[in-house]
Structures are given as structure tokens and as C-alpha cells.
Length: 212
Length: 214
Image 1 (cartoon, each protein chain N blue to C red):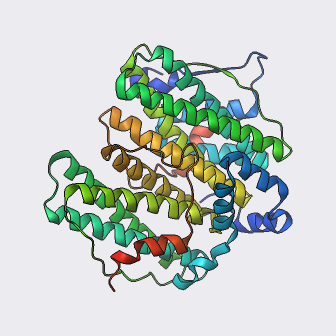
Image 2 (cartoon, chains in turn purple, yellow; image 1 turned 90 degrees about the horizontal axis):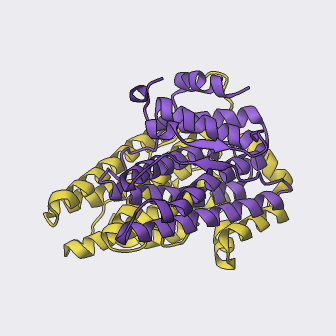
């Protein structure tokens, strides 16, 4: 498929790699979520994630491991951006804040998975395709919007009230990040009254290729 | 929805009956919150059940009507601000857009209450101090941050997965509004740090009480 046919071509080049050569279920779902967003737009991310998590059937630990994989991606992205994004001034400060927040999300999710008796997934390797500040900002906006949709998609699958409350407190922070990055891009901080939601027919079509 | 993969509300309730207030869950909160105060607040907000919105109706209807009341308030606030003439240019556009989004939340919540067989809460009469652009922006920031915390405080009390999905889609938009206003005010986009704090209905209602005149 040519880039111009994609809803978010910048997502299509993001790589999720695992040294073992064997992707974990969480990594597969993250790859699928990115692909669904790249091909169909970010409105597809929430329903994709919801269906993929339901199909995986790993309960709250599975959902938290997926969230952890997503936070690994964001934490790596901003840690790398400190060196690579060519940012200065206000944006440089913002990147530092976002990197610290995402790292805290990684640590909290890791601890919570362990405390629920689960095994946290290992951090995969990521490859982020951008060459300048504008490219970084475009990808950052898409990642943050994707993160919001992914958490919102997973929310109704969560069984434990406490886990849901904690996931909610993370997604609100992701939404705040999304707005701040969008302002940097001179984009609408809140482009829709409802963060992207369901479209069942498209979901089925999008999910099929990514689930074994 | 064809062959929905959503867990129904019953399974979450059953799960809670088995594990409610477990040590693992408390530890999870401690891990996320980083301090006792957050843990207490979160536990209080999620452990209080939907009783604290009982004045607005039973269960999900009560929560939706509580949210509807807050959205009515936000919609009226932005409409008053637009009329005040205190803002021009891009700030006015932002205010207009946010007001429009709050009005869409009012419509969606009204429809959701009706769908559940409930009676939508009436629009409250409101009055806001609109003295200067700066004071208004500060009030807007306060209102949006409270709004986001209010949704977060109720998320775990919602029983229907469909209602929860809608509430989450609104919650993150309130978070976006709050961060935008905080940016305009030169404040931190994440005043609570990496984990947003919930607020109980009681505290939220108390803080908006001054603006409700009937």
C-alpha cells in the first residue's frame, strides 16, 4: 500500500522488534493497533484494542501488559527525542516532562502487574522514523492520540475497579500530553467532542490480519 | 453490536465480589499513586459505589445525570464567556469550540439517560463572575480540571460497559480542555503529575455550588 493511501503514514514506519525473534502477545497487539491507526485512522485504535484484548483473554494482567508495551514505546520515544528531536526552549521542556511521565507509567504498570501476580513483558526495541523536529512532533501527536484511544478502548474490558481507576488516571494524563503536543503543532488540542470511538464493521476488517 | 466481545457489567461486579479491596489492588494503587493521599482519594472515589450520585438517580442513571449537570454548567459558562466580549481571535475560537464540545456532551448524556429509561436532570440556572479575561481563563481552567477529575472519580462506579466507553471518550476530552487552558495560563499541563487525581461527587458539587443559582 502506498503511503498516500494511509490515514497516518508516519505510524506505518514505526517498528516494534524483539531480540528473541518471538513477539509477545502485547507486542503483537501494539503492532496491530499501530497498523490499524496507520491504515484506517485513530478511530480504529480503540475498537481494535478492545477486540484484540478480548480475543487474547488474559484478563487485567494482559491489559496491563499491553498498556506497559505502549508506555515502553512512549517512554523510549521521548527519551530518544531528548537527543534526536532537535528541540529547544518550550518544546525541550515539554519533552522532558513527557519523558518523565511516561517512565513513571512504565514503572507503575510494571509494579502493578507483579503485584497482581503477573509477569511484566520485556521491553521490545523500537524504531521511530523521523528526521527533524517537525517529524518528531507529527509522530508525537499520533502516538499520544493513539495512546488515548488505546486506553479508552481497553477501559471497558478491565474487571477490577482499582485497575480501572488507575488506568483512568493514566489516560487523562495521556490526553493532557496529546493536547500539549497538538498546541505545539498548531493543531486543535481537542479535535472532537468524543475521543475516537467505535465503528464495528471497520474493526472486524482491520483486526483480522493481525490476530492469529 | 454483533457478537460483542465486551465483558458485561455482571462479570466485573462478580469479580469485585470475589476480590473487592484486595491487598493486590491496594498495592497497585500505592504503586501508581506514589503517596498515601492519592491512594486514599482513589480508593474513596472508586470504593464509594454510586451512592454519592444517588441524588441524581440510581446507578448509571445517577452518574450520567451528575455528569449532565456538570456539562450543562460548562456549556452555560462558555456561552456566557463568548457573550461577554472579553475574548477575541484565537482565544475566542478555542472558547467557542470547547463550548460547542460541552454542548455535544450534554446532548449525548441526555440521550444516554433516556436510553437507560431515566429522566434527564434539568438544566441548572447558573451565574459566573466574568470580570476580566484573566479571571475568566482561570475560572475556565478550574472548571475543566474539576470536570476531568469528576469523570475520573466516577469511572469505576459505572456498571454498563457501553456507558463506561462513552464516559471515557468524554473524560479524555475534558483532560484535553484542561491541559489547553493550563497552557494558556502558563501552568503545568499535568498539575497532579504523571497520574491524574479523581475527585468525589461531593467535593465537585461543593466547588461548583457558587455558580448554581437555581
